[in-house]
Amino acid sequence: MKPKKAAIIILILCVSLSKFSLSQTDTSIIHTDSIIEENIYLFKDVEVKPTFMGGDKAMLNYIWHEVNYPDQAVEENVEGTVYVHFIIEKNGVLTNICVPESINKYLDAEAIRVVKKMLAWNPGKQNGEFVRVKHRIPIKFVLT
Image (cartoon, rainbow, N blue to C red; front, side, top):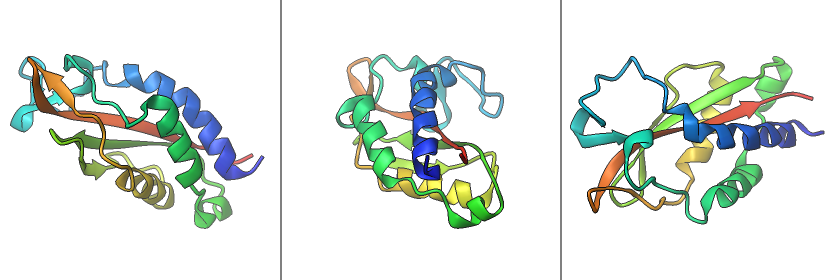
């Protein structure tokens, strides 16, 4: 199996688990109820969750076609899960895209590149109003 396809197959499992990933306490953020800095809500706490246009299947399809296992990472035999964090703005645009805990600069860069190319999401809502929502998705790279 090609490295790209192996990474995406593993991603399918990760995406299904990602809905629960932000339900754990994030000690790097000071919580005030469900709101974090600058009126940003945690994904797990917002009433209407933001969604990728077309849903999870569409996101998996998008990532399937976009992710390329970096040649340098293949040469160095590097594998791992990259957690890409971002904020879904009130208009659905993704901002503050980052990888807080690097596993490899090549894998990190590829995961960030793919997320940056995503189209706007359907934004989250709280009390009937569009709100900013912090989210993360795992992208697992596995060599086969």
